[in-house]
Image (cartoon, rainbow, N blue to C red; front, side):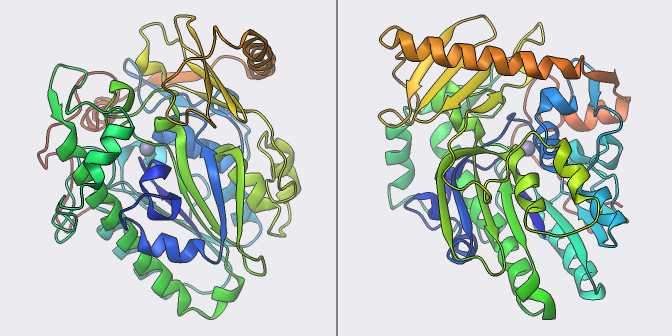
Length: 434
Ligand SMILES: [Zn+2]
């Protein structure tokens, strides 16, 4: 069972230390699971990061760099194996239920899913997606692979009742969090619209709590199934959200605000465990494959550049992250290279920054000038890594159809303005697609 949470920064979940109870169900799950304290997305964008989960490769390896960029959509390199196809061939019944258009089946992310559900509109609320998933689960027996994707924490933040009123702000948590993270009261989005960051941060917590409630519904249903004691359940984020930190309300950059996500994995027979080292969303697939025994898993494992993090607990390795190409006119990328406790950030314009994440977890104090040896070591580590990735060649793109472009632009992708707080992008009717 895989649950992917869209646009979730780890430090806003109560099981990652946030003082508000935004995630009681995930917190409960984490008590009997492996919890990865420092998991970074390979890219701060929905389709690239999800493609990494299903292939065990980084975006520059699988070729999907963006949801939409300058009218183009990216295609995965041909001949790559995916988790779903491998499980399907091994006899699993497969079903995917997604909540937004960046993950529509045509992107290739739906390969191998016998049952598939996606919204016709740009997005749909998580409770509708979960309704469909639970209906399917109730009717399905035997070995199965279920993927549920929940999109509510993505902007615009409009929690459903009663979660819109759940946090009333009287606890002062958001104000203190904004102060600690250097968030200004007002931020200007791309396109010039001003955003009240306090209201946005309050509403974001409501979205997280609403999303957690859907996870709770799934956990209740799973707990009642006879095979629950043999079920692996992974809950993982695809990328974070700026929420005003570093002046960015949304996501798309290589700050940890945009990359650091929750990853909780319940594995039968394994005692609860916290992995403190920095790991990657790209490690999800090899870590899963190391816990299940299916034919063909070894071929897929050979493909992965990620690491089985439970085979090597305590192993600290460098982790690569990158920005979305939509942040730069020339499709140049920012690159992040994390070697605990250091993070080297090379911006698309060549600017180099270095942060000591132990002393400075929010990346405020550049140490590039003060630590030339560390800077040189991480710079050369990143250069060698990018050289290895270059063997995968150029990304493949095709022109987006007008419908694809309209749906993705409604969610803020492809350049231009993120939609204001109206319901135009969300399908709240009962008729929500395939
Ligand atoms: Zn996303």
